[in-house]
Image 1 (tube, helix red, strand yellow):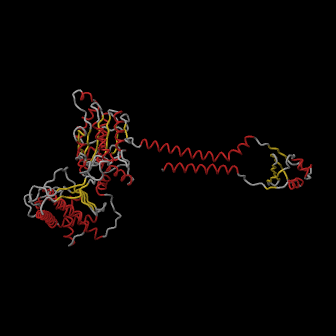
Image 2 (cartoon, rainbow, N blue to C red):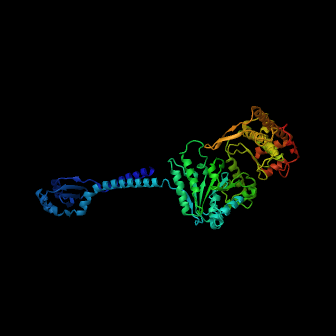
Image 3 (tube, rainbow, N blue to C red):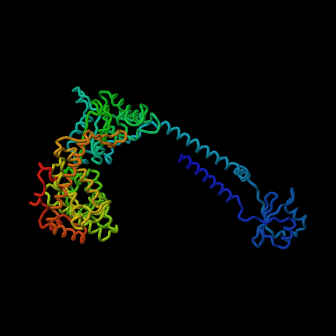
Length: 625
C-alpha cells in the first residue's frame, strides 16, 4: 500500500512538472499590443517602425523604442498592397526592414499534436504504474508462503565462524564436534549402520552463545547455514507457517549437506493443546509440519536441524523424542577462566592500556554471559571516547561493569545532605558486615553515587564461581543484606525506605532456606509447588501442598532466620562502631572506595575474614536464627 501511494505521488509530481514546463515554454514573455493596419501605416510614416515580420497573415512589429506590436494584413493580399491601400509613404516604407517567415510542417504538427499528446502520455504512465503495482502484489502473494531463512555461504570467509571464534563452552564444542564429523564424512557412519542425527537442541540462558555456536558448527563443517527465527514462521494467515517450513526444508535438501538453525524454537514448539486456540491454531500447524519434515528425512539425507531456546520446559514432548532432536547441548554461563578467554576475544580489536588485567575483570563479572562481556568492552570503548582518550584503561572497564550491572551514574541527581549521609551509613553497614563474615563475598567497591534505581551500592564479588550455596553462606548473605538497615537504626535511631529491596531479597532467601533447601528444623523437604500456564510462559501461582499449621511454622522459621541475621549484623556494627564511622565519613568525602582503600580503613592488607566471624551461629542451631 505504501508503494502504491509512493508511485501515485511520483505520477502526480511528474504531471505537474511537465505541465509547468509546457506552460513556461508556450507562454510568451510579454504579450504584444494589438494595433490596426491603419495605425501601423501611421507609425511607418512617422519612422517609428524598425522591423516587420510576416508569418502568413500575421504581422509582428518591432518599434525603434523596443516595443513589440502585432497586427493582421488583408487576406489574399501582399503586405505592400495592404499598406498602399492605407496610404503608406513608399519612401518611409523602404526604410523598414521586412522579414517573411514560413511555417514548417514540423512546427505545425508539433504545435497541433503536443497539447493533446502530453495528457495521453501522463494517463498511460499512470496506468503502467498501476499495472506494475498489481503485478508486484501478485508476485508477493505467490511468494508469501516461501521461506525467509537467511543463508550463510560457507565460501564467504568474512561471515564464516569457527570454534576458534567461540571462547569457553569446551564440553559443548566437544559434543558438537561429532556433528561436524557427521557433516564432513557421513559415509563412514552410514557404512557402519549408524543413523545421522536429525536434530540438535541448544539449551542455555540468553547471551550464552547458542546462535554463535550453531554458526561455528556450519563454519567448521563448511556447509550452508540456513538461519531463521521461530517467530518468522507464524503469520496471521492460516497455513503460511507450514508452507514456509516445507520450502525451508526443500531448500536445505537441495543444498545438502546443510544446517537448518531455528532460533527461539519455543515460539512455535510449545506444548500443543495448551493455552488458547484449538487444533487449527497456526502455531500448532507450523509445529506439526516441522515434525513431519524431520520424520521425512531419508537415511542418507545430510541435513541437520539445530534449534536454540532458553525455555526447554515449555517445548512439546514430540520435539524432544528420539529420532527428532537426538542431541541436547547445554550452554552454561561461563566460569572465571572462560570469562577471561571471552574477554581476550572481545579485546582483540581494542586499544588497551598496558595495565589492563583481564583476569581481574573476569573476577569482577560472575554471572555475566558472553553477550554481557561483549557489551562491557563496547561500553568501555564508548566511555573512553567520551573522555577523549586513545586507549581503554581499567577505570573505564570497571565503570562499564557497574554500568552493565546497575545502570549509568546519576551524578547530576540532587540529593540532600541528610539523605547522602543516610546512604553513606547504609552502604558502610553492608560493607562492614560482609568484611567480617568468613563466608560472605569479599567487598571490592563501595559507592554512594546513584546508579540506575540504586542510591548507592556495595559490590561484593565471590572469590570463585559458585553453583552450590551452603547454609553458612546464605546466613552470611542475610546478615550482609540487613547490615544497611541496622546501620541506619544505630546511627539515626530510625530506618528509611532505602532498605526495601534488601529486605525483599533477605525474605526471599530465608523462605527459600525453609521451603526449598531443607535448612530449617522443619526437616529436609520442600513446601509448595509452583505452577505455570504454558501459553503465558511464566510462573503465576504456587500450589500449597501443606496445612495451615505448617504455613504458620514456615513463617516462624523465616522470621527466626531474619531475626538471627539482624542480631549478627547488630553485634558486628556495634563492636566496630568506630570503623563504621570512619568508612561513612570517608564515603561522604570521596563518594567511592575501591578495594584497597576499603581494606586500609579496616586496618588490614586484604579483606580476609578475622576471628570476629565467630558471631555466626553454627549450622546445627536455628534457635538464634
